[in-house]
Amino acid sequence: MLREAKSLSQQLEQVQSLSRELAVQARELAITVDPVDDVSKREEGRHATLPSGVWASQFDAGYRGSGFYPRLSDIEHDIPTALRMTAVDPIMRTVVSAHSAVVQSFVTMADCYVRLFPYVDLASLVPADHDCRDFSFFYRAAPEANPSRNTIWTDIYEDPAGNGWMTSAVSPFYSEQGEFLGVAGVDMTLDVIVNQVLAMELPWQGFAMLFDAEGRSLAVPRAGEQLLSLLPLENPGANDLHQEDVIRPAQLDLKGHDVFKSLAPRILEQRRGLESVNVAGALYKVAWERLPGNGWIMLSMVEESAVFFRTAEIGRNFQLVGMALVGGLILFYFSFFILMSWRTHHISRRLSVPLAELRERLHRIGMGAEVESAGGSGIVELDDANTTAEEMYQRLRQTQRELQSSERRLLDSLEASGDSLWEMDIPARIVQIHPNLWKMLGASGHEPLAMREIDFDRLIHPEDLEQVHALRHKIITTYGESCECQYRMRAPQEEDLQQIEAMGMNEAGMDAGTGKAGDKSLQQGGLTADAEDVLEGVAQEEGAQEGDEREGEERESGIRWVLLSSRGRVVLWDAEGNALKAAGMHIRIR
Image (cartoon, rainbow, N blue to C red; front, side):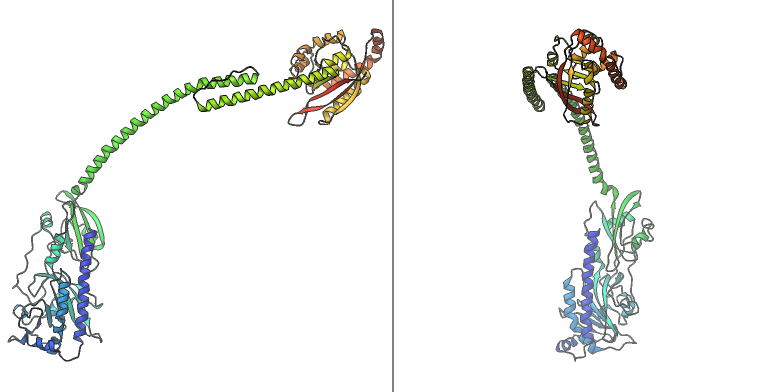
């Protein structure tokens, strides 16, 4: 609808432009004061005053228009001006040929002199007392009705020249002093507009109608007449002339027709719109657009079922396609999830055995056991993990061999030197002893390699215990600095071994380095970590009291004391900085 309305609006705008240009030329001729030229003199011979008092052209010159001066009592004929206006004929001829919708052009002076092209025998057609001021093409453009001096469009009126129903684009023209001189117009017969509206090809078997600014029909096709039950209008006869403007009756008035009565206010107020109306039980879509030039309204109607039939058919097809797509998606995802579930279980089974083997290999590597090379699993990541585990195993074995070799060299050096290593679990008060110590002391060789600190102190000469305790305290509190002292020590006697055996220290020797034997010995001996300091004090008192007795017993039993040099330092701390383990060496002096 917008496309068709824009096309018609452009044509009307072109016609308005032609009317304005014709008015400009007519004004120039009207205000000219030069004498009549040769052309006008020749035209004077084609005009004459008739017995009826009318001054008019007498015959057609083939390319000239026709002039008509009516006989009016209040108007005097201005023949010189009328002759000058004959020069407007070529311009009017150009205007008519410039647009296919234009059927004639005219200039009407303020004293009702008419200049018309193409030629019409106005003297025989128009009454002698024809007053132009009674016709809409004149009075609607005159100053009283058109003070803004715009180009106006007339209602559909009966052409006095016998061309039937007509509408005109009329432009007034004035003198330099503002005096109203007349109007220049371009005529379009209603048939031209109707034929153009009827020729519009609208889809879905729709049709278009044209209304004026007041909602009165200008063009209604036969399809519209049948649908809306309208009576056809008869065209006026060529000889049926009147003394005043005859306005074409409206075949359809939007404000009075039952179909459009409720919709008419919106159509007349809004520039464009789209609504639905009910016609004989069927819904019709109504679209309209108001033309900007003259306010006419182009309106189209089409049955909704015709508009939406194809759309509904496409919608049904899309619905079927959508259902097929949804069904296909459901089937696809159902199959996809079944496949993924099967693949997951398959891959899980495929991974479980190699992962279990890898876990077992890592456990055996951690335990230090022999591990065989793993075969390929077909899974790149697992094969890389097995390769990494194999490399780790080989590095650990190499490191273990290097450590064993280093330990062997250290033991061989100790055996060759006769020196002895010692370690002390400080929280558990457990002393780990190298066998060389018992060789230094001349023991039997079956003595334990781990014992409680209190049992170890029983083997130290009572006179040297104080400096031994000072050495231990210094070792613990100096944070890694080496400390050294000398003290005398004897080999354990049978009663010492029995007491150590009763306290379970032989088992501690089996778990040396873990601290578990020390804890067990403390529990079996009925001691706790809080009582160790008390126990140490008691041991010192016992040693002091028994000192004199032991000197006598030693001389009687033949105990041999060996002077040793002990050096050591803390080698391990916890997160709070508390000493956990100390280590050192015994060296025999004499």
